[in-house]
Image (cartoon, rainbow, N blue to C red):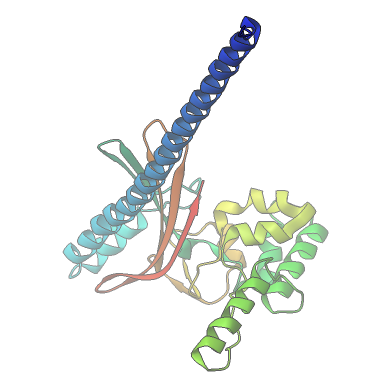
Length: 281
């Protein structure tokens, strides 16, 4: 006589199978959602960068075309440039914003020649500006610290410097040549300045709209504040010599954005790119 398999075992097997299928289905659904999220973020990053570039192109084209129109009329050309950033402005100057499909860009133009260059002002110049918002002793201490970093009297190596040197050495070895020393500008951005300010960061925040790291040794006296003029070194000019285009792009409804800072020399024949910085926000 054959023995019948207990019905309980069969029921347990069915339940285990159902549970396994449910788990597999849930995992597949989660993976699909994750893939969709990754794809959405990748697209948003691409849109953000494209829009930031569009902002730079829109801003430089508008100003470059205007400079060419006024090429033979120096007075109108200088007046046009002077209106880009009035003296004592809050930091925002000539401003553009537009949309393309679901992408958006906003670009601000800053006259960096109306600001004090941290890399060029020296301890006395920096102390003069800082003293407008801080006690003289604190202003002098911060100014001497920054000036010491600019002149190489103190270390301000970024954490990635060792990795960059190692990469340069590897590249040189693969190419069969010696690695050349990596040259680093004292301060590449105002973020670098803030990073080393420590407890004096609040002082920098108060004068941030009057500072730059992108100067060329000339100060636009028509656009600079009295504090900047009192602290500035180098030559004085009557129009911007350098313009910084700060463009931010993003996809409508998405939190990711891309910021591009493009620095241009202002010459008689138009704008010429000097430096390009990018970062995600």
